[in-house]
Image (cartoon, rainbow, N blue to C red):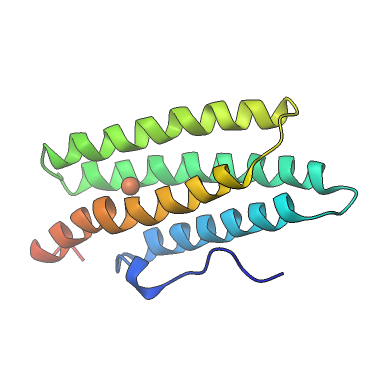
Amino acid sequence: MNRFFNWHSNLDTGIKDIDVQHRQLVDYIDELYQAVMSSDIDAASKVKQVVGKMYVYAATHLTDEEELLKRINYPTPDFDKHIAEHDKFRAKMRDFEYSVQNGYPVTFQVVQFLKDWLTDHIKQTDMGYAEFMKQNKLM
Ligand SMILES: [Fe+2]
């Protein structure tokens, strides 16, 4: 099946560790799409498995990024706004993971939401601290 979510250079922050993690998230969302669209007999367990690993990976990524924001003394209100976006996403992911592990199916709309959220968050929010790091010669 064709890929649903491809990496694009406009998602590059220029921060190596962060870009590696973002690429992995893109791959997990794509893997989830493939599992959701699959007619294989074990598709439902594959969906659960992908959601499980994506949930853990996303949580670690958000924590790593927040550690970075603290380390570079990223100023408020941008810092607070960034954390608030992460918190909102964390809450959604928690509900999503819980419902999937309890047998609820994953809809295409949810996969589309994950793709849109990650794309918009990287372009509009993560690029803010990447720019800050460039301006302050922190990378
Ligand atoms: Fe972020």
